[in-house]
Image (tube, rainbow, N blue to C red; front, side, top):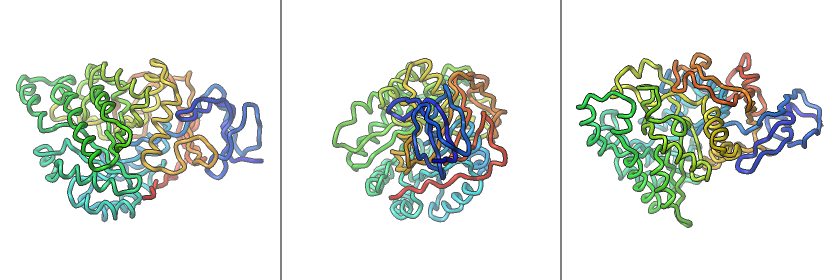
Length: 452
């Protein structure tokens, strides 16, 4: 039997299950066989993966495409993602009129993206909630996000005047009626933040730790209790996105009970690697803030135990100039989609002994399961041949200039991680070979429409 592609004699990582040596055979964009060690077969292309991991391509559940150069972000950020082993991403899409704006945004992505993509709808008004059943069916979007940090004056400054607890509960009621529906929430009590912020600003503070002090972790934790409790009453699965605090995870553990609506948890690579004491200054401003080393260690234990199901980047491809030198006026967020896997390999697998199959689950299988993505996230016959090959003995030294991102900096600049992506494959097509983007790479990415 002949194949289009064989990844030969690699250490195949089966998400959540284990690692087994063998070869992955691909035909017509799908995985069609797992061959035993030493088993040979004819193929148009054979890639020797000896002593390398063969993993499912990452699906980044948390990105902000369009925050840099609008539609052109689909071109630059998808190629940056591919260099990091990411074969699919979900981006948050906000608009006053989601019904009118989603098709053009999707078309912009289809014309430019090198990887597969999907959307989460941002809910900022009652109109969005009322339209959700029709929007979900029309666009195949089963996930939404509510921004509790945009309540009150903070939201009004950005033009959002309807974000409150009533909108949250209505969104949960609507999400409960969507097949596969899940409501993600940015948890941060913006009403209490001024209690801490005002005296800190008055004291002239302008350092990275102050961003954590003006929005301490318990303000995330408090919001999580409300979201989880409302989710239980609305019988809707909730997803706590970009969790930053170990205390928040402890609360979720206590709130989970059989028979109740699930409470999913996502964290991001930077909350597993960068602390408030990192020497990156204003570059490290992000919402929620970077926390302490104790929080990093606590979140890692959550990843190890499976209490944290998914890991993303919260990638924001703005320019360094938007940071400036004032922590209070700097833009929030930073790029990071290409560093998810290097960070997890270094901080999780190397330093803490977190099984590689656990990391693979958090970046592929669990994302596909949570967001109802068919045929992705696993290495098994019938699944899309979305794969990444990793040399665990090579190194990744981060330099923003090495990526085509619209963003011109990285919070990981100059850092070295043990483990390097050598090949990225989307539905059997080589996007990255020997660490470099394929020549004449077009826009093979497809929209991940989810049945609902």
